[in-house]
Image (tube, rainbow, N blue to C red; front, side):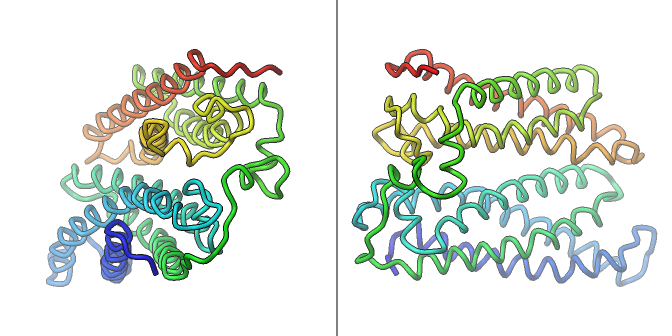
Length: 332
């Protein structure tokens, strides 16, 4: 175990989140079975009082969940000088079997947490809490994922050994290695670049269309999700090359370091934020016919759509600026 304030904050925060989620999930099951807003029974009144507490707890818990992804990556990057062979977070995450599963699950839970907060915010705007069973059903789905992340993260930090020799990012993100990343790197760059900018343009078009007309929410949500996935692929395939100005350096973690102005943090924050906001528009679409949400929901969705568009535009602008003004010129 290696002690550092960020690591301690992650471990302590994860334990607290586990207790919060377990407590909330316990009452969530009661809400799913017995919630009846029309009832004036003592049990119903007790459930209603608890929902205020649970909603507050989950806002803090999922707020920390969003922050913890970047805190975890920062911690992994900070640890890299302690291991022979590691140059960035890519190497330190490879020190044991738990690092990469933990960070991938953290990304999934980042999206889940953001969507739950969107649904909770929308539900609290209505007088009769029409989405309460939906959001607690989602909470029960999310809970095992978060608890699994807590276990993986704990196993990763507790299993760290300074005498371990790991691999550098140049080895891990290479076309010669086995795995998904090697396939991405080996794939021809022009089709990936075309798909990235094509779907980003489609996302802009569908987002503007939804914002102006209030229609096509599912399309905008779908394109936001596909654009997010394609952006991750594009980062590894060709985007990172322009930041490093090296045709063989595909690591998505080195851009988080000081040498590159920590540009990775705003890149990943805008990408994740744009994806959550865009997907959130589609998640709320089935509830547009609920009477108590008829006035609130269009406003919430419009705000999500414009937020997603702004964040995706910032993400694309940073990348395009770097590609245009980089000293690296890729051919073919």
